[in-house]
Amino acid sequence: QFGPLIQFPILFGDAFMDSTASTALQVVPHIGLSAGCFCVLSLGVDRLLSVAMIKKYSNISRTRYFSAHLLSMAVFSSFTVYLLIAYYVP
Image (spheres, rainbow, N blue to C red):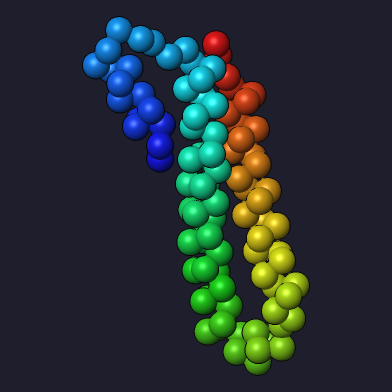
């Protein structure tokens, strides 16, 4: 997360940062954090399916399977961004 690095001079100087700039700096890290968390969950479910249903798992189309994982990560991350925008208070 790079937000604290940008805010470091502001903490020890005379300048200030409004909440709009601070929120804009934190959008990308929030997307990365939520996508990473969902990726760990997705990996756990993938390993569970590979052990529980060995025959069916080996017959799954890899392209569709990875596309479904990427799409679900994108939806989860976009919901996080929606929450940032919906509950933004200037």
